[in-house]
Image (tube, rainbow, N blue to C red; front, side, top):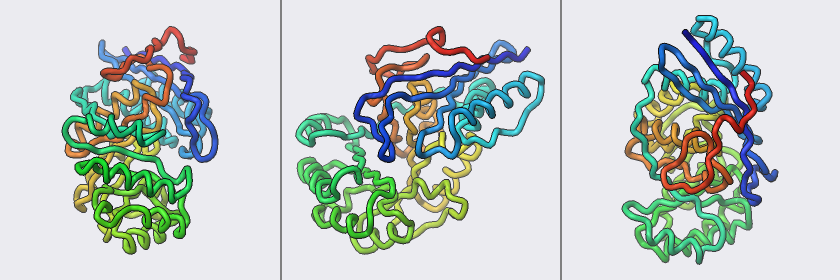
Length: 321
């Protein structure tokens, strides 16, 4: 007999988290638990403010409608909200044992703050040294100087940079000016450096710094294609949709020889552990971008290995169903 529960959660964030010029004080979302024949599956539905096409309220309505249909014995189509489709597809994949249990808990560390504080942590990293820096929040010259300093100090370091389309072509060139040419090949890629894809392509061609598509994947005119200067695509499943769509995009990119990075959209620890499983399953050769739990003040239901943040159980959440 089918059963289901839905909870709404709110997790406090660190004070310094800013998304698209708005401060994010809490991370809000839904948890879903599906039960059938003594098996259960969990999913997280958490639209990302400023990035998702749907609000949490819209996702909640779509989630509740889907769950009611499922409880009635139907196998409903995935809802139109990408976050709802992803979370519900994860819950069903767990329930039916389609989501492998093996997980890749490695993560490219997100470097924030003073470079002098970051350097010892990067130097101590075991194995492949890959780190991520958000750029475009400060002056482009400063971003270039910080990237160059880290690459110069750690010869085996590779950097992933994320500009979120924050630079004009002039600012992008200001950044590149302060990264020594001999270090540029160790920038694995910059996600969407400029406001348009064409500007980003021109940046890659003129600087020799590789780029990656992120936001572009969710635009209606986007087509997967191998291009000069394009090294990778970054897939954020919460913004993409159901697991089948995520897997389809991974396969399309891999067929073109592009690296694929599974990346978080500030999910809770429960959602992050599922993303780690998806990364181990679909992109085993790529270090996932999941180092966002440190931006939160608590975990949720499932813990991330090695985290000492307190963990909330469902008893502390608002029950919707």
